[in-house]
Image 1 (cartoon, helix red, strand yellow):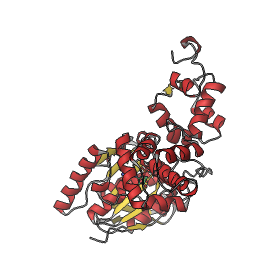
Image 2 (spheres, protein in one colour; image 1 turned 60 degrees about the vertical axis):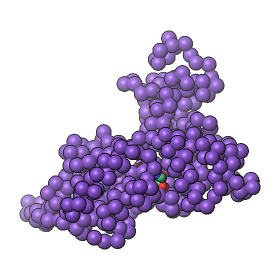
Image 3 (cartoon, rainbow, N blue to C red; image 1 turned 45 degrees about the horizontal axis):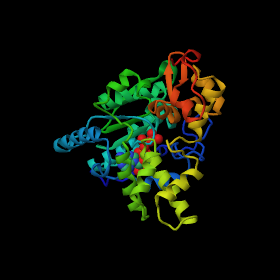
Image 4 (spheres, helix red, strand yellow; image 1 turned 30 degrees about the vertical axis):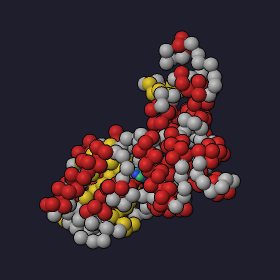
Length: 365
Ligand SMILES: Nc1ncnc2c1ncn2[C@@H]1O[C@H](COP(=O)(O)OP(=O)(O)OP(=O)(O)O)[C@@H](O)[C@H]1O
């Protein structure tokens, strides 16, 4: 097999500033969103674990994946297709790169929004070499015709190339060498069953515990060559919303603060001062989270309110509110999702320093 280096084909995941094709680039002011610009992506890439043994946490998925990969290597065949699901920043892209590295295969990278037409995907598939890993980020955003082409390619290692137009068009089957698709999605529920069923292994990544994030931070501080004190690592971890991407990002901001306003040491005091500057509170909520809570409580009396209305109220895309802010707010017990919309739960009012309304005034009672 080849060198294991990543080869980029149809754009890096996150390579387009407008990641979701909705005309709304992720704001660079937020510390919790996917990397929006080149320096940020480069900073992230520098901290990525390269091998499974360096990948912190997610013990169950790591063990299962390790079996899948070892078995495939033992048989000398490409492993089953792998689907990785979970909120942003938990390591799906990192795992895709690790899968290729562990297999000694090269990696092709694309994403659902980057594939506008089935023909785009056919071109990528027909250029795959034996054993390559094709990473499709945001696979739930593939257009329907591309999805259908992908089922067949994944199952039968074949693409049908359409020649001609209209009544005279004919499909010429083109067989493909064995390869492995690694799909990543923040919304596994949106994947149509036929596509989901083509994946032989599905790993769901969960939020990380604070002690796991501390390990991520210690590793990253080592790579960055900065002196991170244990108490500061614990403080940053506790504000990182269970997400390594956020932990690494906060670490870099604390490093900036320590360099410019401190004595270079990443102490507890430096961590607290830096995170105050960046408006990340003790619970790890940032400005977007607090706007969502604020809108829910102050403007909509605690809800229920629909996602779209809530998103308009905070000046964001519904998808951003749903995938970036909500999973954490729900997990923290600050908001709830009901069939009639989002509701603020008592801790949300408390967090904003507002009196908790009597149960009869809201729907959460
Ligand atoms: N288990 C882990 N151990 C150490 N670092 C990690 C781990 N998981 C993620 N990271 C770090 O977090 C950052 C974000 O990870 P990654 O890009 O893989 O997330 P993702 O789930 O693909 O996010 P998205 O869905 O937004 O693409 C990377 O820089 C990586 O270094």
